[in-house]
Length: 123
Image (cartoon, rainbow, N blue to C red; front, side):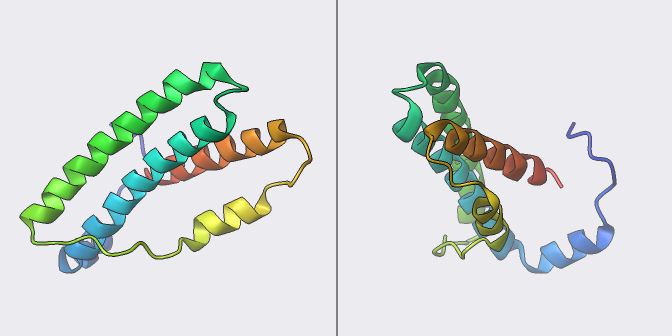
């Protein structure tokens, strides 16, 4: 389904079984942040780039459906959401983007960073 290049290490599964609550909490926040990011791009650049609005709103809806599904699993396991921890990987990607005067490079950087984060979520 995901087309991963390598199988999941069985040791990862063993680790997660003992930390299911942390996994569900982190996964829920990842889905929520993905929806927030899509809507943030719409809010900042939707007026100048209306062709992005519908696809990003659809993406935000899809990510919220994922969030709801993960939240249902978390609730079923007695897991409550905690405040999200800072994500060093995302912060490093954002810091690596150029700070141009024009909004177009910033938008492209934001879209590329979002795509990298989404692609890495399949690992």
